[in-house]
Length: 61
Image (cartoon, rainbow, N blue to C red; front, side, top):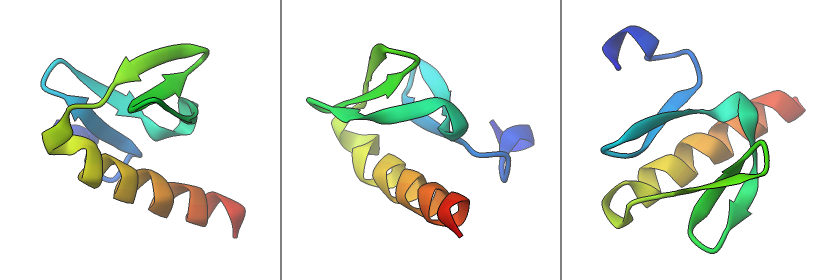
């Protein structure tokens, strides 16, 4: 996880890291990646949403 810091990865829950480049959207508390919903844990949801918002903001610039 430390090696991927700054490379647009964020932890969605304790089971997996999500590459923000592949997130299509958010639906029902899940990150949708290539059509598959990946559950975001309650404890990591705020951090994930902030990271995704920052990433999307950078992409749009």
